[in-house]
Image (cartoon, rainbow, N blue to C red; front, side, top):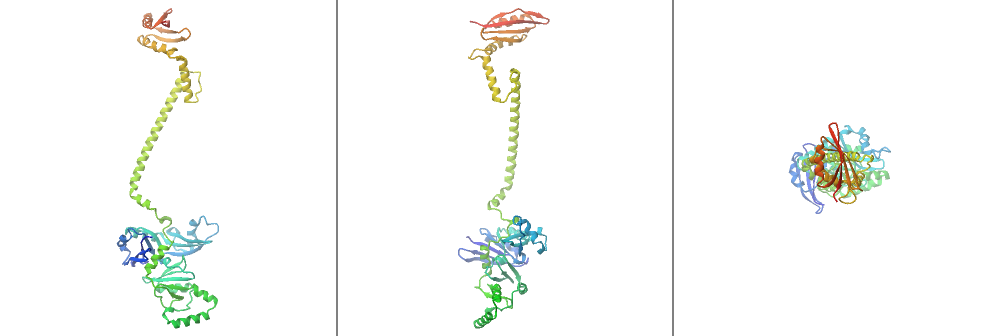
Length: 432
């Protein structure tokens, strides 16, 4: 893994801020230092520009607790958990961020911190240009041991880790009271302050005097410390190899799976942040696309309405011309019936049927608009067309006859006047 920046915020607003850049590959400190207060976090922007940033917060600002889970509430645990802690908390549960650290059977280990405090930490880092990857209680970054505590002192405060999910951050003057509350017996002082001979004698005497239960108690309250131990403290304090506290915490933060950035504070994907500057452009593009889609829908609806109008009109004309067909199930049926009727009227071969006659008859009728054709009868076998018409005067029939004789053999029937109209018939045959 690449280098990363670890920052520890003090529980005091004006307290110093310790920081360190650690390289897991080289197993060494790249850079480290101390800021006067959190207002100077901007000075670390260059160190966190291309490195993951882990933020350590004081264990005194986070409540680490364990609750019993009622049976049958497993699926709704996220909703039930705040109310299981309600009696232990002085604040309204709606004002608190509750992160579950671990669950075993009917027990759940949780970390509780106020939303206001979480937002303050993130705001400090955001203003400084730091993108935080993890937020971890500092005490949970100490090494975890079976049947013993781990401890280290930093900035006048003691960090103690009791287990994988439990720990505290306490001022030195409160440490003894806390340890007595944990029922840590005053069984020995700091062994390293005595001579090796005295340590051996004391250890042998203690071992002979303790019962099996006391020996278990000693094991459970052994405190492995990485900085000089305080004097007069309960418990069996065992010195570990001295180490720079921030380096110790940085390695623990890198290995830790604890991260308070959950729920509403869950990290957004990298691509989400990359797209953030394009949000306004995306919104504008969506609006334009919406307008185009709306216009397309309106246009399609208009075309569908127009097609429906054409269909309705074509069916009306079809029924008017062919009243024997009342039911029109499909458009293809209408088209097929029309084609069949056209074939019947037009003849089986080109040039036959009534349609060619009507086409040739039309110019003459247009030149004598006073004549109104009342009836047409076509006899295919005799190849003749009979017209029954009316006009205002006799000469109108004569004018039509003269025009038709140019292309047909015309036989004019008797003309009769009935009031203001003259009626008559014309029989047309093709010239042989």
